[in-house]
Image (cartoon, rainbow, N blue to C red; front, top):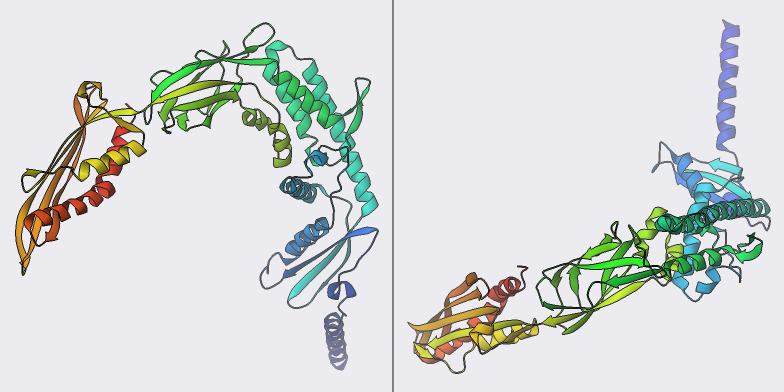
Length: 457
Protein backbone atom coordinates (compact mmCIF):
# COMPACT_ATOMS: atom_id res chain seq x y z
CA UNK A 1 0.00 0.00 0.00
CA UNK A 2 2.80 2.37 0.88
CA UNK A 3 4.50 1.47 -2.38
CA UNK A 4 1.29 2.31 -4.34
CA UNK A 5 0.96 5.68 -2.59
CA UNK A 6 4.57 6.48 -3.36
CA UNK A 7 4.13 5.74 -7.05
CA UNK A 8 0.94 7.82 -7.25
CA UNK A 9 2.68 10.71 -5.50
CA UNK A 10 5.60 10.56 -7.93
CA UNK A 11 3.27 10.51 -10.95
CA UNK A 12 1.38 13.52 -9.61
CA UNK A 13 4.65 15.40 -9.14
CA UNK A 14 5.67 14.53 -12.72
CA UNK A 15 2.38 15.79 -14.23
CA UNK A 16 2.58 18.98 -12.15
CA UNK A 17 6.15 19.52 -13.23
CA UNK A 18 5.19 19.09 -16.92
CA UNK A 19 2.33 21.57 -16.59
CA UNK A 20 4.53 24.07 -14.82
CA UNK A 21 7.22 23.67 -17.47
CA UNK A 22 4.68 24.26 -20.28
CA UNK A 23 3.30 27.33 -18.62
CA UNK A 24 6.71 28.88 -18.08
CA UNK A 25 8.09 28.53 -21.65
CA UNK A 26 9.43 31.98 -22.47
CA UNK A 27 7.78 34.01 -25.22
CA UNK A 28 10.15 33.94 -28.22
CA UNK A 29 11.67 37.16 -29.51
CA UNK A 30 9.84 36.93 -32.87
CA UNK A 31 6.50 37.25 -31.05
CA UNK A 32 7.57 40.45 -29.32
CA UNK A 33 9.43 41.99 -32.28
CA UNK A 34 9.08 41.15 -35.96
CA UNK A 35 12.32 39.67 -37.32
CA UNK A 36 14.00 40.91 -40.50
CA UNK A 37 16.04 38.76 -42.87
CA UNK A 38 17.59 39.68 -46.21
CA UNK A 39 17.45 36.05 -47.35
CA UNK A 40 13.85 35.23 -46.40
CA UNK A 41 10.34 36.56 -46.67
CA UNK A 42 8.79 36.52 -43.20
CA UNK A 43 5.18 35.76 -42.29
CA UNK A 44 3.82 36.00 -38.73
CA UNK A 45 0.26 34.84 -38.07
CA UNK A 46 -1.76 35.26 -34.90
CA UNK A 47 -5.23 34.04 -33.92
CA UNK A 48 -7.43 34.49 -30.88
CA UNK A 49 -8.45 31.26 -29.21
CA UNK A 50 -11.57 32.91 -27.85
CA UNK A 51 -12.73 34.16 -31.27
CA UNK A 52 -11.72 30.95 -33.10
CA UNK A 53 -11.97 28.13 -30.53
CA UNK A 54 -12.26 25.32 -33.10
CA UNK A 55 -9.76 26.42 -35.76
CA UNK A 56 -7.44 29.03 -34.26
CA UNK A 57 -4.38 27.26 -35.68
CA UNK A 58 -5.77 27.32 -39.23
CA UNK A 59 -6.67 31.00 -38.88
CA UNK A 60 -3.17 31.82 -37.68
CA UNK A 61 -1.61 29.86 -40.56
CA UNK A 62 -3.75 31.69 -43.10
CA UNK A 63 -2.79 35.01 -41.56
CA UNK A 64 0.88 34.03 -41.67
CA UNK A 65 0.67 33.21 -45.39
CA UNK A 66 -1.05 36.52 -46.06
CA UNK A 67 1.60 38.36 -44.05
CA UNK A 68 4.39 36.56 -45.88
CA UNK A 69 2.97 37.42 -49.29
CA UNK A 70 2.59 41.07 -48.29
CA UNK A 71 6.39 41.24 -48.19
CA UNK A 72 6.71 40.20 -51.82
CA UNK A 73 7.24 43.25 -53.98
CA UNK A 74 6.36 43.27 -57.68
CA UNK A 75 9.21 44.65 -59.76
CA UNK A 76 8.49 45.82 -63.29
CA UNK A 77 10.83 45.14 -66.18
CA UNK A 78 11.28 47.99 -68.64
CA UNK A 79 10.50 45.52 -71.44
CA UNK A 80 7.27 44.27 -69.87
CA UNK A 81 3.67 44.89 -70.90
CA UNK A 82 3.03 46.41 -67.49
CA UNK A 83 5.69 49.08 -68.03
CA UNK A 84 3.49 50.65 -70.69
CA UNK A 85 0.88 51.38 -68.00
CA UNK A 86 3.12 52.64 -65.22
CA UNK A 87 1.50 56.07 -65.43
CA UNK A 88 -1.78 54.41 -64.47
CA UNK A 89 -1.38 53.89 -60.72
CA UNK A 90 -4.70 52.06 -60.39
CA UNK A 91 -3.65 49.60 -63.09
CA UNK A 92 -0.32 48.85 -61.37
CA UNK A 93 -1.94 48.43 -57.95
CA UNK A 94 -4.57 46.09 -59.38
CA UNK A 95 -1.89 43.96 -61.01
CA UNK A 96 0.15 43.70 -57.81
CA UNK A 97 -2.97 42.76 -55.87
CA UNK A 98 -3.88 40.07 -58.42
CA UNK A 99 -0.35 38.63 -58.34
CA UNK A 100 -0.45 38.34 -54.56
CA UNK A 101 -3.87 36.69 -54.59
CA UNK A 102 -2.57 34.19 -57.14
CA UNK A 103 0.56 33.61 -55.05
CA UNK A 104 -1.57 32.87 -51.98
CA UNK A 105 -3.04 29.87 -53.82
CA UNK A 106 0.20 28.59 -55.35
CA UNK A 107 3.03 29.55 -53.02
CA UNK A 108 5.26 26.65 -51.97
CA UNK A 109 8.52 25.81 -50.17
CA UNK A 110 7.87 27.95 -47.12
CA UNK A 111 8.84 26.46 -43.77
CA UNK A 112 7.62 26.76 -40.19
CA UNK A 113 10.28 28.63 -38.23
CA UNK A 114 8.39 28.49 -34.94
CA UNK A 115 5.10 28.60 -33.08
CA UNK A 116 4.00 29.68 -29.60
CA UNK A 117 0.80 29.99 -27.65
CA UNK A 118 -0.55 31.16 -24.35
CA UNK A 119 -4.01 30.92 -22.85
CA UNK A 120 -5.46 33.54 -25.21
CA UNK A 121 -3.52 33.49 -28.49
CA UNK A 122 -1.68 31.24 -30.92
CA UNK A 123 1.28 32.49 -33.03
CA UNK A 124 3.01 30.85 -35.98
CA UNK A 125 6.13 31.95 -37.86
CA UNK A 126 6.73 31.12 -41.55
CA UNK A 127 9.71 31.93 -43.72
CA UNK A 128 10.31 31.55 -47.45
CA UNK A 129 13.69 31.68 -49.14
CA UNK A 130 13.76 34.63 -51.51
CA UNK A 131 16.08 32.77 -53.85
CA UNK A 132 13.87 29.67 -53.89
CA UNK A 133 10.78 31.78 -54.52
CA UNK A 134 12.50 33.58 -57.38
CA UNK A 135 13.59 30.27 -58.93
CA UNK A 136 10.11 28.78 -58.57
CA UNK A 137 8.55 31.84 -60.19
CA UNK A 138 11.04 31.62 -63.03
CA UNK A 139 10.14 27.95 -63.63
CA UNK A 140 6.42 28.76 -63.60
CA UNK A 141 6.95 31.67 -65.99
CA UNK A 142 8.88 29.52 -68.47
CA UNK A 143 6.14 26.89 -68.27
CA UNK A 144 3.52 29.60 -68.93
CA UNK A 145 5.47 30.86 -71.93
CA UNK A 146 5.64 27.33 -73.34
CA UNK A 147 1.88 26.90 -72.82
CA UNK A 148 1.24 30.29 -74.43
CA UNK A 149 3.33 29.35 -77.46
CA UNK A 150 1.33 26.13 -77.81
CA UNK A 151 -1.97 28.02 -77.91
CA UNK A 152 -0.49 30.49 -80.38
CA UNK A 153 0.85 27.75 -82.65
CA UNK A 154 -2.56 26.04 -82.57
CA UNK A 155 -4.26 29.28 -83.64
CA UNK A 156 -1.89 29.62 -86.59
CA UNK A 157 -3.07 26.28 -87.98
CA UNK A 158 -6.74 27.33 -88.05
CA UNK A 159 -8.45 28.36 -91.27
CA UNK A 160 -10.83 31.18 -92.20
CA UNK A 161 -13.85 29.12 -91.23
CA UNK A 162 -12.50 29.02 -87.64
CA UNK A 163 -12.20 32.76 -87.16
CA UNK A 164 -13.52 32.85 -83.59
CA UNK A 165 -11.64 29.74 -82.46
CA UNK A 166 -8.44 31.28 -83.81
CA UNK A 167 -9.05 34.56 -82.01
CA UNK A 168 -9.96 32.90 -78.73
CA UNK A 169 -6.93 30.63 -78.87
CA UNK A 170 -4.75 33.76 -78.98
CA UNK A 171 -6.63 35.21 -76.01
CA UNK A 172 -6.01 31.93 -74.14
CA UNK A 173 -2.33 32.32 -74.99
CA UNK A 174 -2.42 35.73 -73.29
CA UNK A 175 -4.45 34.51 -70.31
CA UNK A 176 -1.77 32.02 -69.21
CA UNK A 177 0.73 34.90 -69.09
CA UNK A 178 -1.31 37.31 -66.99
CA UNK A 179 0.66 36.60 -63.78
CA UNK A 180 3.81 37.76 -65.55
CA UNK A 181 2.83 41.04 -67.20
CA UNK A 182 5.59 42.70 -65.16
CA UNK A 183 8.26 40.39 -66.57
CA UNK A 184 10.43 40.55 -69.67
CA UNK A 185 8.61 37.76 -71.55
CA UNK A 186 11.18 37.59 -74.32
CA UNK A 187 11.31 34.29 -76.16
CA UNK A 188 12.20 32.77 -79.51
CA UNK A 189 9.15 32.02 -81.62
CA UNK A 190 9.34 30.69 -85.19
CA UNK A 191 13.03 31.54 -85.30
CA UNK A 192 12.70 35.17 -84.21
CA UNK A 193 13.01 36.91 -80.86
CA UNK A 194 9.69 38.32 -79.67
CA UNK A 195 8.13 39.79 -76.54
CA UNK A 196 5.30 37.33 -76.14
CA UNK A 197 2.57 39.65 -74.85
CA UNK A 198 3.24 42.24 -77.55
CA UNK A 199 3.40 39.52 -80.20
CA UNK A 200 -0.02 38.17 -79.19
CA UNK A 201 -1.67 41.59 -78.86
CA UNK A 202 -0.40 42.57 -82.33
CA UNK A 203 -1.61 39.29 -83.77
CA UNK A 204 -5.08 39.78 -82.26
CA UNK A 205 -5.16 43.35 -83.59
CA UNK A 206 -4.17 42.22 -87.09
CA UNK A 207 -6.82 39.51 -87.07
CA UNK A 208 -9.49 41.99 -86.03
CA UNK A 209 -8.41 44.27 -88.88
CA UNK A 210 -9.50 41.50 -91.25
CA UNK A 211 -13.13 42.21 -90.27
CA UNK A 212 -15.41 44.69 -91.95
CA UNK A 213 -18.73 45.61 -90.36
CA UNK A 214 -21.38 46.97 -92.72
CA UNK A 215 -24.84 48.20 -91.82
CA UNK A 216 -27.88 47.71 -94.02
CA UNK A 217 -28.68 51.41 -93.45
CA UNK A 218 -26.71 54.59 -92.89
CA UNK A 219 -29.36 56.61 -91.03
CA UNK A 220 -32.50 56.06 -88.96
CA UNK A 221 -35.41 58.31 -88.14
CA UNK A 222 -37.19 57.99 -84.82
CA UNK A 223 -39.10 59.83 -82.13
CA UNK A 224 -37.96 60.40 -78.58
CA UNK A 225 -39.48 57.87 -76.19
CA UNK A 226 -40.49 55.57 -79.05
CA UNK A 227 -38.99 52.44 -80.62
CA UNK A 228 -37.70 52.04 -84.16
CA UNK A 229 -40.34 49.83 -85.74
CA UNK A 230 -37.99 47.48 -87.58
CA UNK A 231 -34.60 46.07 -86.53
CA UNK A 232 -31.69 46.74 -88.85
CA UNK A 233 -28.95 44.35 -89.91
CA UNK A 234 -25.21 44.59 -89.45
CA UNK A 235 -23.03 42.22 -91.43
CA UNK A 236 -19.57 40.98 -90.46
CA UNK A 237 -17.37 39.92 -93.37
CA UNK A 238 -13.75 39.58 -94.41
CA UNK A 239 -12.37 42.74 -95.98
CA UNK A 240 -10.48 40.74 -98.57
CA UNK A 241 -13.18 38.61 -100.15
CA UNK A 242 -16.44 39.65 -98.36
CA UNK A 243 -16.97 36.14 -96.99
CA UNK A 244 -19.25 36.21 -93.91
CA UNK A 245 -17.89 35.78 -90.39
CA UNK A 246 -20.28 33.71 -88.32
CA UNK A 247 -21.12 33.82 -84.61
CA UNK A 248 -19.10 36.99 -84.04
CA UNK A 249 -20.24 38.80 -80.87
CA UNK A 250 -21.13 42.44 -81.44
CA UNK A 251 -22.42 45.23 -79.24
CA UNK A 252 -24.18 48.56 -79.76
CA UNK A 253 -23.67 51.77 -77.82
CA UNK A 254 -24.28 55.49 -78.22
CA UNK A 255 -21.45 57.86 -79.02
CA UNK A 256 -23.85 60.69 -78.26
CA UNK A 257 -27.45 60.47 -77.16
CA UNK A 258 -29.16 57.59 -75.37
CA UNK A 259 -31.25 54.61 -76.44
CA UNK A 260 -32.48 51.25 -75.21
CA UNK A 261 -31.32 48.70 -77.74
CA UNK A 262 -29.97 45.23 -78.41
CA UNK A 263 -26.73 45.50 -76.45
CA UNK A 264 -25.41 41.97 -77.03
CA UNK A 265 -25.93 39.84 -80.07
CA UNK A 266 -23.90 37.76 -82.54
CA UNK A 267 -23.84 37.18 -86.27
CA UNK A 268 -25.70 34.24 -87.79
CA UNK A 269 -24.67 31.74 -90.48
CA UNK A 270 -24.84 34.52 -93.06
CA UNK A 271 -22.73 36.89 -90.98
CA UNK A 272 -25.75 39.07 -90.14
CA UNK A 273 -26.84 40.36 -86.74
CA UNK A 274 -30.12 42.15 -86.05
CA UNK A 275 -30.04 45.25 -83.87
CA UNK A 276 -33.29 46.45 -82.31
CA UNK A 277 -33.88 49.92 -80.84
CA UNK A 278 -36.63 49.57 -78.26
CA UNK A 279 -36.69 53.20 -77.12
CA UNK A 280 -35.01 56.50 -77.94
CA UNK A 281 -34.19 58.14 -74.63
CA UNK A 282 -32.44 61.35 -75.63
CA UNK A 283 -34.09 64.33 -77.31
CA UNK A 284 -30.88 65.34 -79.13
CA UNK A 285 -31.88 65.80 -82.79
CA UNK A 286 -28.76 64.09 -84.17
CA UNK A 287 -27.38 61.02 -82.40
CA UNK A 288 -24.86 58.34 -83.33
CA UNK A 289 -25.16 54.60 -82.77
CA UNK A 290 -21.88 52.68 -82.84
CA UNK A 291 -21.93 48.94 -83.65
CA UNK A 292 -18.65 47.19 -82.79
CA UNK A 293 -17.07 43.80 -82.22
CA UNK A 294 -17.67 42.91 -78.57
CA UNK A 295 -14.26 42.35 -76.98
CA UNK A 296 -15.84 41.75 -73.57
CA UNK A 297 -17.65 38.69 -74.90
CA UNK A 298 -14.51 37.41 -76.64
CA UNK A 299 -12.63 37.60 -73.33
CA UNK A 300 -15.14 35.38 -71.52
CA UNK A 301 -13.35 32.26 -72.72
CA UNK A 302 -10.90 32.56 -69.81
CA UNK A 303 -10.70 34.11 -66.36
CA UNK A 304 -9.23 37.35 -67.58
CA UNK A 305 -8.31 39.60 -64.66
CA UNK A 306 -8.58 43.42 -64.83
CA UNK A 307 -4.96 44.26 -65.79
CA UNK A 308 -4.96 41.97 -68.83
CA UNK A 309 -8.56 42.99 -69.63
CA UNK A 310 -7.38 46.60 -69.77
CA UNK A 311 -4.70 45.68 -72.29
CA UNK A 312 -7.18 43.76 -74.44
CA UNK A 313 -9.76 46.55 -74.26
CA UNK A 314 -7.15 48.96 -75.63
CA UNK A 315 -7.15 47.01 -78.90
CA UNK A 316 -8.92 48.78 -81.76
CA UNK A 317 -12.00 46.80 -82.80
CA UNK A 318 -13.90 47.06 -86.11
CA UNK A 319 -17.08 49.13 -85.94
CA UNK A 320 -19.61 51.01 -88.00
CA UNK A 321 -21.67 54.10 -87.18
CA UNK A 322 -25.32 54.87 -87.90
CA UNK A 323 -26.86 58.30 -87.65
CA UNK A 324 -30.09 58.58 -85.70
CA UNK A 325 -32.31 61.53 -86.57
CA UNK A 326 -34.64 62.16 -83.65
CA UNK A 327 -37.97 63.80 -84.39
CA UNK A 328 -39.86 65.34 -81.48
CA UNK A 329 -43.28 63.97 -80.55
CA UNK A 330 -45.86 66.35 -82.00
CA UNK A 331 -48.63 67.41 -79.62
CA UNK A 332 -51.76 69.43 -80.29
CA UNK A 333 -53.32 71.05 -77.20
CA UNK A 334 -57.00 71.73 -76.64
CA UNK A 335 -57.27 73.76 -73.45
CA UNK A 336 -60.09 75.37 -71.55
CA UNK A 337 -59.14 77.05 -68.28
CA UNK A 338 -62.00 78.91 -66.65
CA UNK A 339 -62.22 80.88 -63.45
CA UNK A 340 -65.76 81.17 -62.17
CA UNK A 341 -66.95 80.06 -65.68
CA UNK A 342 -64.90 82.79 -67.41
CA UNK A 343 -61.98 81.90 -69.71
CA UNK A 344 -58.54 82.71 -68.33
CA UNK A 345 -56.19 84.41 -70.75
CA UNK A 346 -53.45 83.37 -70.41
CA UNK A 347 -54.00 80.19 -68.46
CA UNK A 348 -51.84 78.61 -65.80
CA UNK A 349 -51.98 74.88 -66.53
CA UNK A 350 -51.39 74.91 -70.30
CA UNK A 351 -48.11 76.94 -70.23
CA UNK A 352 -46.68 74.83 -67.40
CA UNK A 353 -47.47 71.57 -69.19
CA UNK A 354 -45.98 72.83 -72.46
CA UNK A 355 -42.80 73.93 -70.75
CA UNK A 356 -42.30 70.48 -69.19
CA UNK A 357 -43.16 68.61 -72.40
CA UNK A 358 -40.76 70.71 -74.48
CA UNK A 359 -38.00 69.93 -71.98
CA UNK A 360 -38.74 66.22 -72.48
CA UNK A 361 -38.52 66.33 -76.26
CA UNK A 362 -42.01 67.21 -77.47
CA UNK A 363 -43.05 69.93 -79.87
CA UNK A 364 -46.43 71.58 -80.39
CA UNK A 365 -48.32 71.93 -83.65
CA UNK A 366 -51.16 74.23 -84.63
CA UNK A 367 -52.82 71.67 -86.91
CA UNK A 368 -54.51 68.77 -85.16
CA UNK A 369 -54.08 66.53 -88.21
CA UNK A 370 -50.29 66.80 -87.94
CA UNK A 371 -50.16 65.74 -84.30
CA UNK A 372 -49.10 62.41 -82.85
CA UNK A 373 -51.16 63.14 -79.73
CA UNK A 374 -53.94 65.49 -78.72
CA UNK A 375 -53.87 66.79 -75.15
CA UNK A 376 -57.15 67.95 -73.60
CA UNK A 377 -57.04 70.25 -70.59
CA UNK A 378 -60.28 71.29 -68.95
CA UNK A 379 -60.47 73.19 -65.68
CA UNK A 380 -62.91 75.46 -63.89
CA UNK A 381 -63.35 76.99 -60.46
CA UNK A 382 -66.43 77.67 -58.41
CA UNK A 383 -67.10 79.79 -55.35
CA UNK A 384 -67.05 77.78 -52.16
CA UNK A 385 -68.24 80.40 -49.67
CA UNK A 386 -66.69 82.25 -46.76
CA UNK A 387 -64.28 80.62 -44.34
CA UNK A 388 -63.80 83.53 -41.92
CA UNK A 389 -64.41 87.24 -42.00
CA UNK A 390 -64.32 88.44 -45.61
CA UNK A 391 -61.99 85.60 -46.71
CA UNK A 392 -63.46 83.66 -49.63
CA UNK A 393 -62.62 80.15 -50.80
CA UNK A 394 -62.77 78.60 -54.28
CA UNK A 395 -62.59 75.00 -55.47
CA UNK A 396 -60.96 73.88 -58.74
CA UNK A 397 -61.66 70.74 -60.75
CA UNK A 398 -59.23 69.64 -63.47
CA UNK A 399 -59.41 66.92 -66.12
CA UNK A 400 -56.48 66.02 -68.42
CA UNK A 401 -56.75 63.42 -71.16
CA UNK A 402 -54.36 62.23 -73.89
CA UNK A 403 -55.50 60.88 -77.24
CA UNK A 404 -53.36 58.86 -79.66
CA UNK A 405 -54.06 60.36 -83.07
CA UNK A 406 -52.79 57.31 -84.95
CA UNK A 407 -55.35 54.98 -83.40
CA UNK A 408 -57.89 57.63 -82.36
CA UNK A 409 -58.08 56.27 -78.81
CA UNK A 410 -57.80 57.82 -75.38
CA UNK A 411 -54.62 56.46 -73.80
CA UNK A 412 -54.50 58.42 -70.56
CA UNK A 413 -56.85 60.34 -68.29
CA UNK A 414 -56.42 61.89 -64.87
CA UNK A 415 -57.47 64.90 -62.87
CA UNK A 416 -57.66 66.87 -59.64
CA UNK A 417 -60.73 67.54 -57.56
CA UNK A 418 -61.59 70.19 -55.01
CA UNK A 419 -58.26 72.03 -55.12
CA UNK A 420 -58.76 74.94 -52.74
CA UNK A 421 -57.82 78.59 -53.12
CA UNK A 422 -58.22 81.45 -50.66
CA UNK A 423 -58.51 85.21 -51.16
CA UNK A 424 -60.76 88.16 -50.40
CA UNK A 425 -62.76 87.75 -53.63
CA UNK A 426 -64.07 84.69 -55.45
CA UNK A 427 -62.03 85.47 -58.59
CA UNK A 428 -58.79 85.90 -56.67
CA UNK A 429 -59.53 82.76 -54.66
CA UNK A 430 -59.94 80.98 -58.02
CA UNK A 431 -56.54 82.26 -59.20
CA UNK A 432 -55.00 81.01 -55.95
CA UNK A 433 -56.57 77.59 -56.61
CA UNK A 434 -55.01 77.56 -60.12
CA UNK A 435 -51.57 78.27 -58.69
CA UNK A 436 -51.92 75.38 -56.25
CA UNK A 437 -53.36 73.10 -58.94
CA UNK A 438 -50.42 73.84 -61.28
CA UNK A 439 -47.93 72.54 -58.72
CA UNK A 440 -50.07 69.50 -57.92
CA UNK A 441 -50.47 68.72 -61.63
CA UNK A 442 -46.70 68.71 -62.21
CA UNK A 443 -46.12 66.53 -59.14
CA UNK A 444 -48.97 64.03 -59.41
CA UNK A 445 -50.15 63.94 -63.02
CA UNK A 446 -47.25 64.93 -65.25
CA UNK A 447 -44.93 61.93 -64.53
CA UNK A 448 -47.63 59.45 -65.62
CA UNK A 449 -48.61 61.60 -68.59
CA UNK A 450 -44.98 61.73 -69.71
CA UNK A 451 -44.62 57.94 -69.34
CA UNK A 452 -47.67 57.43 -71.53
CA UNK A 453 -46.33 59.77 -74.19
CA UNK A 454 -43.01 57.90 -74.20
CA UNK A 455 -44.55 54.45 -74.00
CA UNK A 456 -43.56 51.95 -76.69
CA UNK A 457 -46.36 51.29 -79.11
